[in-house]
Amino acid sequence: MLFRSLKGSVIANGVVSTTLSDAETLWTEIPANASASLEATDKKVGSYSGELTVGASQTGLLAYQLISPTVDISSLDSISLWVKPSLVTPSSRLQLRLSDDGTSCGTGGNYEDINLPALTAGSWKNIIVGITDSTTRTSVACVGLVANTSYSATATVNFDEIIVQG
Image (cartoon, rainbow, N blue to C red; front, side, top):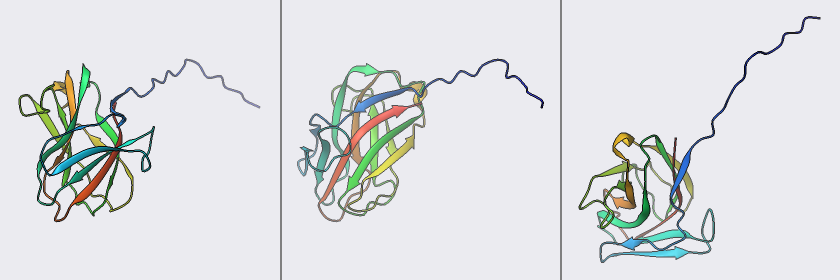
């Protein structure tokens, strides 16, 4: 019987990750016809999920959470998050915003809006999206949710555990 020995070693580095929002604290809402709250019953991780109620025809930045201290994600390449809309949501209707603006989440700084895929009404989905230009993201100060196109009726969007990973 022939036995071979394995020489050398394999070193596996763990996947680096940083939590941008755990949805345990209330986000700041922007437009008058959007409201942010914490949902204790319908959640994926922890005690709460974030919940946004969005009026029909609303577009733009809906709500955001400031990140302090800022985080450097320049070596990371994707974001994982849980999302559950009350209405069918076509691809690119919702976007996740990363911004270096620690005041208003993008209106006074550099930001990137990342399209989210199509979502089924009433179902939680774990989404992983790529960061298109992480090399310039050395001081992310804010994460936000944007309506790129509007819903035709009032919608509720729950979200949880927004984590950037590499």
